[in-house]
Structures are given as C-alpha cells and as structure tokens.
Length: 320
View 1 (spheres, rainbow, N blue to C red):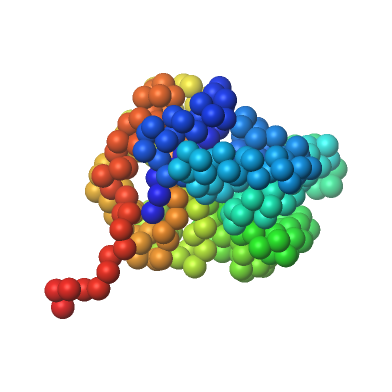
View 2 (view 1 turned 120 degrees about the vertical axis):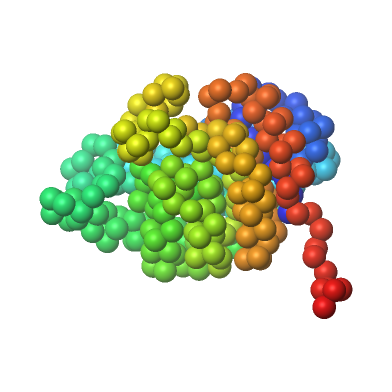
C-alpha cells in the first residue's frame, strides 16, 4: 500500500510546490483533480490531451518527485437535469478517461450523479424514503431511464480505454451505499467499482468493514477520511442533517481528520480488511476537517496513518 492524498487540498499551491510538499511528507502517491467539483488546480486536462509532449512532461514531473498518480478525480454530476451542467460534467469525465489512458493511470473517480424527478426537472432530486408512492416512482425512473443507461454507456467507453471507474458512495447521489454500488456494477459492467470512503458510511450509520467485505471484488481506490457522530445532537435530530458543515457544534455529524472520529482500532482493522480482500493500492488522504487548518489536518493524518498502513507483503506463514 502507498500513502497518498487527494490534491484538491493543495489547490493554492503550484504543481511543483504541491509535489515537493507531498514528497517531503513521505507520501508515495497523489490523486490528481481532473475537473468538475474538485476543479483542475494542478493540471489543465484539455491542454494535456491536446499535446503528447505536455502529457508526458506532466507524468514525468510527478514521477521525478518519487510519486505515483493513484487516480484522476472528476467528482461531478453528469446526470444533472440542467443540461449545461450535465454536458460540462460529462465532457470532463470523458477527458479524464482519455487522459488516464494517455498517462498510464487505470482509475478515474466520479460520483454516480443524481437526476431530477422528470425530464422537466431543474434540480437533482435525491429520494430518501419509498412512500408516498411518488418517491418510489421517481427512484425507479431515475435508475431505469437515467442512471443505468448513462453508466452502461460510460462503463463501456472506459473499458474500451482500459480504465476502471471508481464511484464514491455519497448521499445526495444515486450510489450512496453498498446496495446501490452493487446495483450499478451489476447493471453497467465489471470495470465499475468503488472509491471507498468510510466517512460517508459512518454518516449513514453503516459499518465500513462490513461494506468492504461485500464489495471485495470492486474496491478500486480508497480515501482516508473520518467522520465524528455527535452523540448529543444525533439522537435528537438524526443523520439527515442539512445544516452548514461550518455549524459544527450543532450538526449531527462532521467530517474529521483520520483518528478524530474513530480511533486506531478501527483504522487498523480497516487497513487489515483491505489486505484481506486483496487491495494493495493507495490510501488517499482527503482532508475536510473544519476544525483544523490544511497543514495541521493533513500532517496529523499522515502521522497517524504511517504507523498503520501495511507496506510489505505478508509472505509465507513461517509459524505453521
């Protein structure tokens, strides 16, 4: 396994400054932002696609700092009912797939997206309960008319380019838990799997270790991000909390740097479970902790995880 980072965190630094900082921090991988919600702070993806020379120089520059590119990330909503947004997010997704092939990266990360409730909708509609029956009809329409047809097409496009698509299970989008992740994969192709972020599962009351075992065939990338469930607010208001992430003291839950939501026991079990299911890729830090600065949150995550990730092959059982 390699310790890495989702580089949106360092959007205020130049490419060289970001790479040097990652190298100095002892990382082995970087997850490059390729548009949509994360933006393109360190790589102009369309420009790299137009120039073989520029693409090679970009790839070589990352390697010169002793770092690998674990994935290209273009988290977006290509199913957005606003056609202009959907078109832009689709184009960025396609560009990420094409650039990944060009520079030898085999994983592109995205969200599954969320349509509206009809072809006349103006905003996404994420359904959280089956009744009244209107909601069940909306979910069925979204999956049958939008989600499956789109990702079946895009799954084939990615497969034709030798790329795996890794989806974050995130509330607000159609793929948000183990069940919906498997539904997408079963309907749209075996090169579709998960960018596994345990924080989103904690938030929903799920057990990430159980989810990992169920998704063992399709864990393509992993985020290291924690979540603290507020044990005073959550019993009172539940987990469907729409208050600002900045209103930390009143929220049911908040994202935290690893170790500040769940302790070493969970994270050691998490890393061990990844090894059990055969995952040996990047553990990519994603820092969204509103109680810590960029530098402190990142540095604490690196220090915490360095002693926990497994970097050597286990070898034979010498004791039996």
